[in-house]
Each structure stands twice: as C-alpha cells, then as structure tokens.
Image (tube, rainbow over the protein chains, first blue to last red):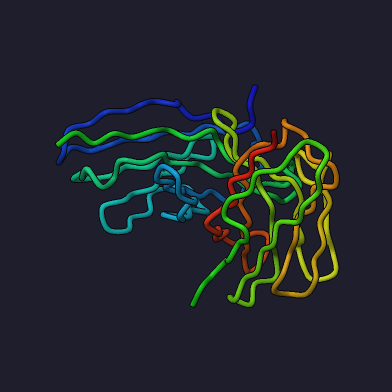
Length: 112
Length: 112
C-alpha cells in the first residue's frame, strides 16, 4: 500500500461545477496535510494546509480532513479553466520521519 | 522577493559527468529540501536539511550528496551522473519541518 494515494485522473468537470479531489494516507499518526497545485511544466504551489478534523475554507477552495477515515479532500467551487492543473496531496507525520510524503497527484481538467 | 531560486534551469550531461545544482532562499527559512519528480512517481525526497548545519537522507539519496552552505543555500551534487537520474529537480524551503514548503522553479536535468 502506498503511503499517500490519489486518483491519477484526469478528472474532467464543466466550468462552474464543483471539483472534488480525494487523498488517502496510511499513517494514522499523520499530523499535517497540504494541497499543492502544479501547472504543467511549473513548480508546485501551496493552496491549502489543514491540521485538524473538519473543513477549512479559503475563497473557492475547501479542504476537508477526516483523520478517523484517513482521508483529506479538496473541493473547488465554481471551477474555472484556469484551475486545470495537477493537484498534489502532501502528508506529514512521525512515521514519515517528520517529512512530507506526496501523493502522485490528480490531473484536473475544467472544460469551458 | 525572489523566494527560492534554483540554478541552472536546464542541463544536459553525459553519463559519468558530475555537476552541482544550486538552491538559495531569501525567506529566512530554517529547513530546506531537494526533491526529484518523475512521471507517475510524484515528488520524492532526496535529502533535506532541517536546520543550518544538519543534513539527512530522504527516500532516494543514492547517487547524490548535499551541502548546506549556510542558512540561505543548499546544494545538490551528482558525482557520477547516470541516465536514471534524468528528472526534474525541485528545491524547497520552509520555516520549520512542520510548516508548508515553498518550491523553486526546478531544474530539468537530462543525462545521456
């Protein structure tokens, strides 16, 4: 079992819809969770960080964390073509040597 | 404010050659990291430096060495390049290991 898993996609949604991206992790003791956006040929850019169970909202983005079920999700409301990118989930925990472990990423395509 | 600066941006090497990838950050961050990104593999940690004066191995350290020159600079050296080291290399920094990481633009390295 990989430590951090994401559906590779591509996930296609129409413009204006809600895009839902999911990430599961294996280390139950994980403490910190991050979502990064990476455009093709560019570097990862931090979108959200979340540390406790529940929802965290920032503009059109909402991160959801459920430690009991070991998943973290990212919702993008009113999706725009400019949101088309690969979204990377990163998890930090004691069993990872206090380092980040990145998932393989989900490619999102927002169709005009 | 440049953030994290990597040089060079592109490099082509022949098998067996050596080279050093440079990284500098101007955010007064304590922790710095080197990752490689390969298609379908996500970001994998090569080495990191939790604070000035310390370095530790990550997930894929073989064939690489690092130097934390000072608080700002963290270099990655390939002593004898191999085709398997063809990849995109990202440097990142953070205030501390538990804080979000910020990435440089990457170095695209091809080894023939």
